[in-house]
Length: 146
Image (cartoon, rainbow, N blue to C red; front, side, top):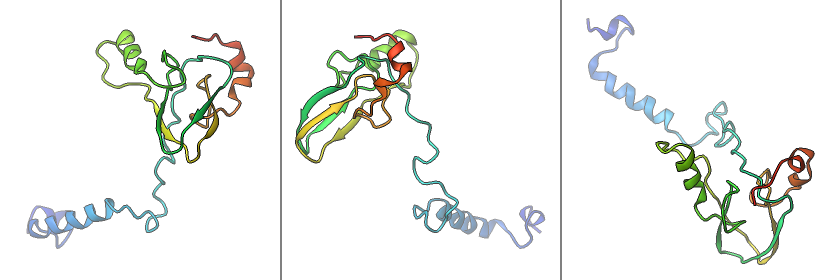
């Protein structure tokens, strides 16, 4: 009688490896249709942190289809509304030993070339586009960092 058979009758070290392979295969399954209890990707993620208010009005800009852009999420970029890496400097100033960056740019591309309104208050729920969040009383009361 093996040590494992006390916990599970018929289980030995020889078939333990096969059992772990089967359970790993089930856990690594990417098909969530087979497991409806498995949350979809992003379903339970925390909402992204909102940056400092740079301005209280959106920024109109002509964007080209197929070109990749990096929208600033921290609000400290000198090349607003686009990222210039300032989020890394802010992290070093506040905590020199920190390894995790709180803000990362939102990378996006548009499907058609036209005029878009990019959020400058950084409070939008439709990143990087303006959704009117700058009109809220909460945003209007706060100071801007421009």
